[in-house]
Image 1 (cartoon, rainbow, N blue to C red):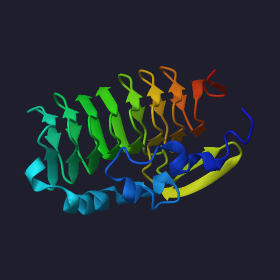
Image 2 (cartoon, rainbow, N blue to C red):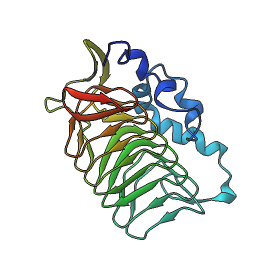
Image 3 (cartoon, rainbow, N blue to C red):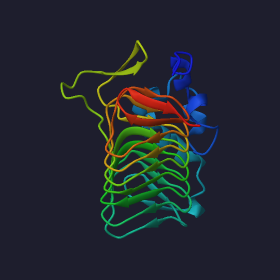
Length: 228
């Protein structure tokens, strides 16, 4: 792909996500880069609950708000500072550590762990996934076993690589930023600082790093093709 297609400007919020599709949008758009929101998710939750209608939510200890149409199975672990939107679901043995903003109709599957995340409306992470320090866009979907690796092996700050440019984030914990309508195949690993443009597909068993442009198919490192 040409360098214009993979310009760093394509990692801006407006390029990765359509406006709305998360109650956190009004907070997200204040950031220049989407990963700048990661250290702020807990503060977003605390601000957002001021706008929630208590008659529409079950309020549990540790600042956990669950919409009355959401389904949380009895074996689910709930940490602190969590919002579940309307018709969201968390299945058997899901581990929702928080902070977390789980959008309308989003699904956290069995034995899936989430921590410090924003899941836009309609996100599906249904089977044995780990999603930490990440933002997943509208109706994005992870196959079974997909992992966001959120800490580098040497614990140094995470950078985002785009073509020949490196953006220093200053974050030691940063998993992935996933655009709207992205499909990630089974058992893929998204390395720290991965950014995937909207409507892209990641092949199963992939080891992904850096920026994947919108409307792409990631087959393997060095082989990314544009969708026809």
